[in-house]
Image (cartoon, rainbow, N blue to C red):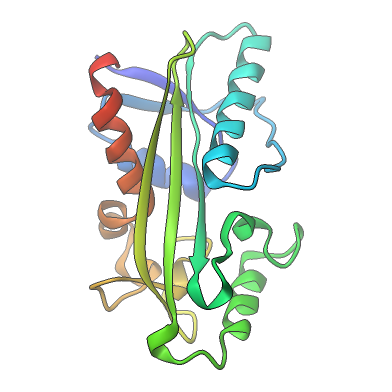
Length: 200
């Protein structure tokens, strides 16, 4: 049985990635044209992810659509930056900053950080709320390191400057198929399916 689930995002790159990750699972992702992004006012990935999911659910119910929703909140936590940009990953350098500007800012702040101290972790929290309100949360992590310059043209966000542990390529260089098997978002999706798969 396939469950139609609305996803709380207006990010085309994230939507494409999520659809690839959930391909072959009981979840079929759909979008709601009326979805309006919510301000991520919480101080944790967990709470921001829930905020997005609950906002979309409320918007759907206002439109008289009773359906399951899914969301995710992800970010990059760099040890040398005290865990930053963290929950501010998508607002690093200001709300109007481009992703290129955010990457440039981060690399600039780490200009003098030696290779052995450039560790970082991508974090993802992914809630699923069914039409009846039942809620589950998957979480995923990908440890790695920050490069000294952008590498690769694929992916989005911080992908060109993050090399997962055990790999030699950035997320951008390795391509979508490989990234979608090892990423923090893929790990969160797997965790979510493990705990709620039987009810879908």
